[in-house]
Length: 91
Image (cartoon, rainbow, N blue to C red):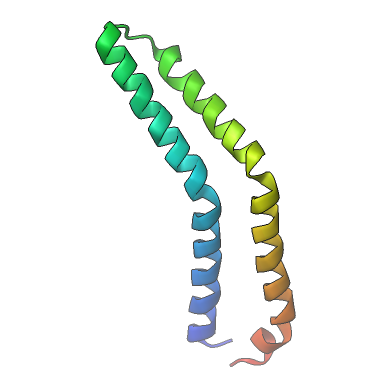
């Protein structure tokens, strides 16, 4: 396997991982900003108030997007297995 093929495989894997995790990260960031805003307004500085809502929002996002995540992973894996012979011959 030559270096270009290996770099393409690594790029594809990283892009797929980034695509899958981005919605959960964005929701976590948005909830974190809202909680920080709420804490600033109320002067309430409780650590569990910051962690628990973010965790619940991220878990809910992952559960809601699970069909899309699994579909994306299935497409990536199918593409990987379909081109497996070509990857073996390269180089």
